[in-house]
Length: 294
Image (cartoon, rainbow, N blue to C red; front, side, top):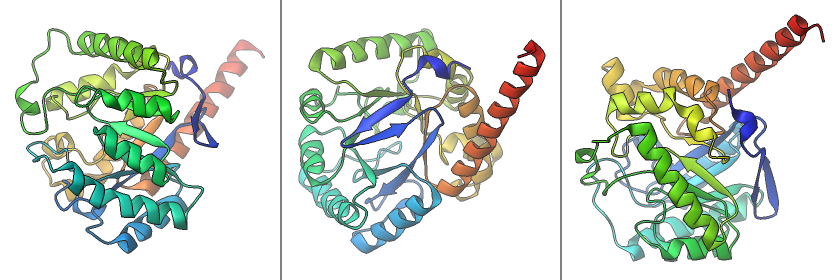
């Protein structure tokens, strides 16, 4: 595993996340149509606070708040509607849990700017800055960590854009180019996300997990967002509500191949998965020392 080639820390505002062991990012959706209903808060800040408190108590290191569904086929909403959905939630969570690290899931620079002022310290951009180039300036200006994801097209048409000459090579070229653009813009903290389910077939999603170590060579942390994705439903032949065990299995594979951050709906199972992974790593390290006579 190539975790040693990745940064071991991530600075978020006045806090530093230790990435020498993987961490969990909990998903909070202020949308009415995100694909997994229990992650939705509706229009209630109190519901969001309940979900946030539960996730933090279970070990989530980051909370990712989104106001626009990006599931396949999802319609775009207006910028004003997106702000209306996410801003009260970020303000409420930041007020109740001031030490919580909050990420705003948006590709709009103005939404990002407003949410950073309200208490968010990280940006999760599914478009990698391609939908709104002004995002780079906002991220750099605020010295925010930036989740740089790969996708093609929009949620409406992305599943018709799954042809690649070579999936892994094409994505690596994309990330090299986008990371260079980010660095030129002054962005210091970058996390790459291969974009599972975004312009990818189920088979391609599994290829990404299998070859995840190659993305670690980009010298950035790697975020994996496979939680309850339709790929898992199709694999096991059951609805999204019954994909927790399949999600955990794929999380373990991702961790073994270098993932630093798991973006999840279910925090406790993900934390348990990380605990088992850490024990496996410790046991393997001890065994190697014994074999070497150290």
